[in-house]
Amino acid sequence: MTHAMWAGTVAVTGHEGAELEAYAARPLDSGPHGGVVVIHHMPGYDEATKEIVRKFAAHGYAAVCPNLYSREGAGVSPDDQAAAARAKGGVPDEQLVGDVAGAAAYLKGLEHANGKVGVIGYCSGGRQTFLAACSLQIDAAVDCYGAFVVTPPPAEFSLKAAPLISLAGKLSCPLLGLFGADDTHPSPEEVGVLSAELDKLGKEHKFQIFPDAGHGFFATDRSSYRPAAAVEGWKKVFGFFGRHLTA
Image 1 (cartoon, rainbow, N blue to C red):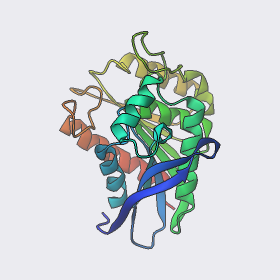
Image 2 (cartoon, rainbow, N blue to C red; image 1 turned 180 degrees about the horizontal axis):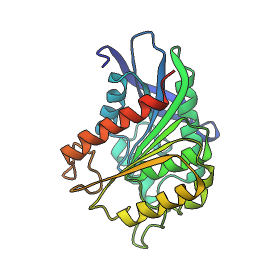
Image 3 (cartoon, helix red, strand yellow; image 1 turned 180 degrees about the vertical axis):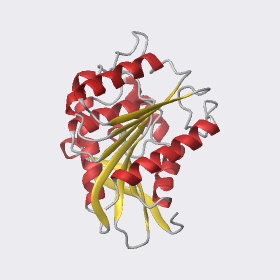
Image 4 (cartoon, rainbow, N blue to C red; image 1 turned 120 degrees about the vertical axis):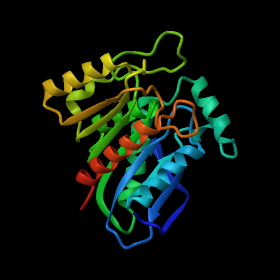
């Protein structure tokens, strides 16, 4: 554990040169440090997500979470930015890839970076993690209950998203997936379909489905939080990144 860190707001250059607000944290020791891009969930760039960024810094990583909704206007509250982005159907896939590429470049440019970058995302960010790992050269990826990788959203959902399973052959790195047995988006059956496809393609991955947990079991500020699954899940995340993001 690292007890001394810097944390604060930075700017990163995203898709098509857009300047994005981002929250970053890093240890204050001399490193070298692996980097982690944190992709926030659909509700947006919130305090709980910033806490996750600091958690990675406490464990020895430089981490950054770009506000994917920054384009909704400077001086607009994160909640209002998120509402505006959701009303448009969420973040377009091409834009997401460019924003994650910019966040990864920010991490690689830090003084004590070791050149390795992982990506982790929650909810819609889990889907976007899979997208980024199939579109960019990433060293490790963690999908936390990302929906709509295998199937499209139901018609009543405002999210505009296409399935991503056709990209599985382009997965650039080992993938850890953490899911809940009681989740419906994605369901355990969908997780099984994705795992079978990755097996067929020879792509390194490990998926775990936690019993007595549904969607959002990592979210400490929500009723979906499941302490046992979250504690075990964090152990798996840090073990996984420890194997793949160390110098």
